[in-house]
Image (cartoon, rainbow, N blue to C red; front, side, top):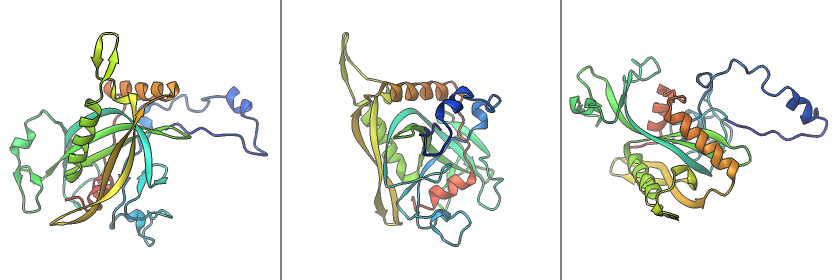
Length: 252
């Protein structure tokens, strides 16, 4: 997360802070930071319940929330930096420690060991279930650019595939002919749309391409984040709250 603060009337001069830049944070490494999730709020999300301790003022179904700052969005612009698909193994609620039991690579044979349960979940012999999860690591574009993660599963996997197709479908003319630019070369608008099937109604993601990144500082930030994620320096800390919140949108 990168939040840029401007000087307010009566505040200390920015150059005083600049002289002591990064002091106090020398021992804070990447693993000590919380990577925000961008998630869609649903009818059962605790953030929309005024009687819940996790209630966020202004939260309502269909809005997007930053799980670290609690900032709410109707829509936002992002640069996709890295993509990863995995099978996340969970215990049922009430049995879970709050963290995934295991995270399996998409190319593992773990899914072949499952059977479809009555709850439509892919169950392992040990009783745990797998969530086929698409992770989009993004840079939020705005006054204060910051990194975040969008986790898509269930019905939202279709949206993830569409987004990936949009990114891979971009071609640019270079000195050696047509080429596919890096995913972090373009900006996309994210919003929510109501979806439904014979099992219910929920809010899902809607993705629209804006155009190429024009600000070099944004491009450099997105590229650096992509490199860090690719090297394994950025680890998403999936938790039962994130999984439950995703389910509470009504994804079927």
